[in-house]
Every structure is written in structure tokens, then in C-alpha cells.
Length: 251
Image 1: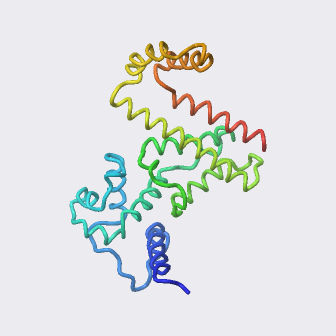
Image 2: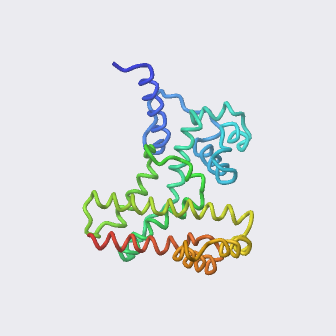
Image 3: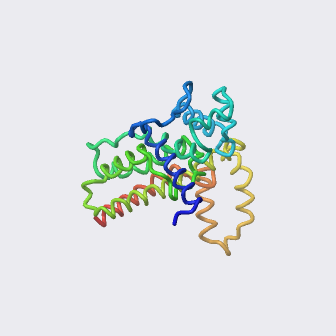
């Protein structure tokens, strides 16, 4: 027998799905819509702009209202909660993703799947703080998944392996983007070259060649070459090419 909590959860889920698919599903007869003035799209766009600028920790209904020049309570006419707003924001960002050109070779199309995920995360770093588990699918994320599947269709992969390939490419791109965002944040305070100029000579003195013969040699070579602790862009290019080649080799 459904409990009050179950009914509340179902109502919340239904409301979020209605908002996500608002441009695809006609409004229910007699349903009360939001008051004229703003739109759900405008509220979502304001949320994205705020999160892009200040980070998701600063995203509140009150802050979105201030951005739009309205009272906080009026925002609830359009979205029921901050959590619902974030779901809508994630889907709205995915809408920016265009189809991957079908004329590209299959290898390039598969690399593009990962490149686009990484580009999206670098443009909207707050996405890295949104849990990917049990994200509610909206039309834009579903369309992007369709684009991704179309990009690797014809590679000789089973349906299950196609999905797994996209998941692996997404996970790799996400992990690399996280490192790249951290590097950009650190560089904003102190450039990598300046950091290495200070720390490099000290590390070389402290790291014993006898105790760490390989780590010391390779680490010093990497630091001198990149003038930084690592090279996220280069690691991504090498890693995604290696991943794709491995996936295609098993097809």
C-alpha cells in the first residue's frame, strides 16, 4: 500500500518530468500554469549563468531570483526546488550538443563523443559536482544519447557494447575534465611554470635516485617538459585515442 512518502515522491518525480518534457507534452486540460512574466526557460538560463559564474555552491533560488530581478517566491511558480532546477539545467546544457557529422570516419566519430563531453564540462565546471547517478532523462540528454549511438553505429558493436563504449568514453572524458578544471583553477592563482620553478628544484633535491629510480627520472622529465605537474590536454588526446583503438579492436 503506497505511503504518504511514496505519493509525495511520485508527485515530485511527475512534476520534474513534466518540466523536462514541457515542450514535448501538451499541458493537461485545466492545469494551472505559471504566472505570466517569466518562463521556465528563462529561470533555467539564469541558473546556468549563475552556476557558470559563481559555481553551483552559490546556486540558490534566492540568487536566481536576484539575477532575474524578481522575488524568490515567484521562482517557485516555475520550478518547485533547487534540485529540480539543477535537473533542468543539466538537460538544457545537453541541448547545445549537435549531431556528430556522419561523414567522419568511425574512429573520429568515437573520439568526438568523448571530446564533446569534455568540452561541455570545461565550459560548465559545476556539472562535475552534479551526481551522474539516477539523473532524470530529459529530451536533450536523450537526444544526445541518440547522437552518440548514431556516431558509433556501424562499428560492429552489439547494442550492449555500444552503450558500454559510450559510458567508458564519458567516464574518461569526465575524469580528465576534472583534472583540467583543477589545473585551470590552480593556474589562476599561480602559473604552472612559476609553480614548477619553485618546486621542481626542491623536489629533485629531495627525491632519492636510489629509492625512486624510475619515478624520479620520469617525474623530472615530465615536469621539465610540461613545466607543470601534468598535461591534461595531452593526456586526453593520448588516452581517448588509445581507448577508441581498443574498442574498435574488439569489435
